[in-house]
Length: 173
Image (cartoon, rainbow, N blue to C red; front, side, top):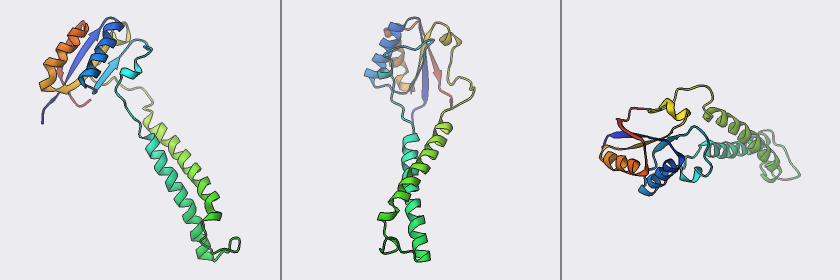
């Protein structure tokens, strides 16, 4: 297994910065972190896609809530021998309302809890090789790659117009 390294590049203007992001995307390098002193319009399509597990967690919780609603209704009807609308006690159609309501309740509360859990609220130190100049007037790209790719990534970033490029061994960020 190859070792992971990172290449820290610093840009002084937005055009070389976005140009470097385009080149990195074309080269297939998607494991990167960007820093910018201000928001840049149109930068989102150049960034690697990062999904959130909140949607999947909400889906599983909603199905669990619906199953819980049906289980509670059918279980209590079978346990106590309730006759609902002259039908067999475990008829699922009358219990759809309870199943739906518990699906919404459990899914919604779990979604709220998942959003709060994954929001990363609170002050945290910057990850990786953060340079304080990134919050003043410089743009930065940190590319994580295999050690064999260091020279190619370095050349790509310098060719895009980076003012400084540093190669470092990637620690666990």
